[in-house]
Length: 83
Image 1 (cartoon, rainbow, N blue to C red):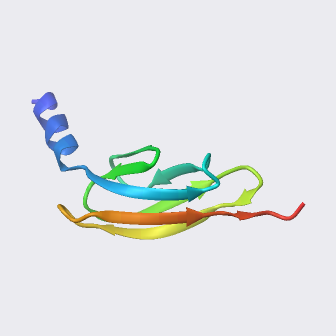
Image 2: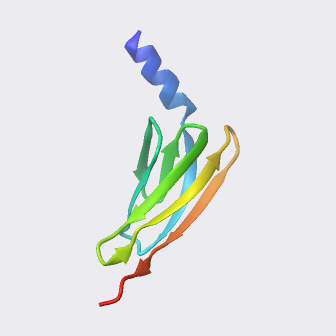
């Protein structure tokens, strides 16, 4: 039963193409199930907050609406902190 539930969730995951700058930015998403494997974020359909973080840069959050079966793209360009 647990395996069937897990396969059901994994089968619903949608791909989001993520373009990040700088390239080694850490990317995460709000939501029950998500994971980032550069350059793709896998999330369930719905509204998500995607956050990019890197030391020496201001963190950046973007809201993203993901619909089943529709391609999604997002660009995260962090701003370097002074100093």
